Image (cartoon, rainbow over all chains, first blue to last red; front, side):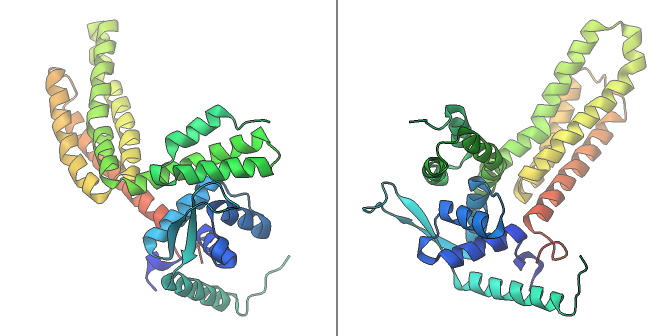
Length: 106
Length: 185
């Protein structure tokens, strides 16, 4: 894996949130998912900037969703691409591999 | 009903690229309601979002920010230094000018280093390649405009400082954009 293919910590959190939310991965929901599961106070700007970076890398794609009966505004839905899924799997393999045999005190 | 803080909203509007503006503002407003109209929450979100939104704009509008970087790396320092020297020379005796010229030149170089570092961080490779020769041209023009009163070493030193600072800024940005595997999984 080339150096630029590694996911940063926040990129990993955002990508996982998009996977978890599936068809409900809008900016606000991604932010709330990270806050709820990772106990991390992320700003909405950081979430959108990271999603934009992931989209540039081809790891997610987005599309505009027109308003429906529940929503009054157009929203941007994010979906993980095949490259994104592969990047997640590679990152997990790398982390699992690094953790093997490691014992942390405290 | 409490409305979101107007100034915070304006800051977000200024920083956010047009493509995402409605989504970001819409999300902020929607969550503002969920947060029971907590204005301090809105302010925190807006302030914390500004650097990321500006960075996103920098990444998207590559060519425009290259132009900005070129200006920052070349024209702005020269204009600033020119105005500064003019002010100083109008306010000190001639003997003091001769004694302290080196000090002023050093301060000018430090200022140029800071600005060039910032320029290097926002520019692209294309902007960097254009910024260096332009910085040189502007320096020569600035020197001519001030009747060559800079110290002799100033011209070479200024180009060296601008080059190193631009390169350092570009390297820093590259490191930030591509985190190393040592620190990130």
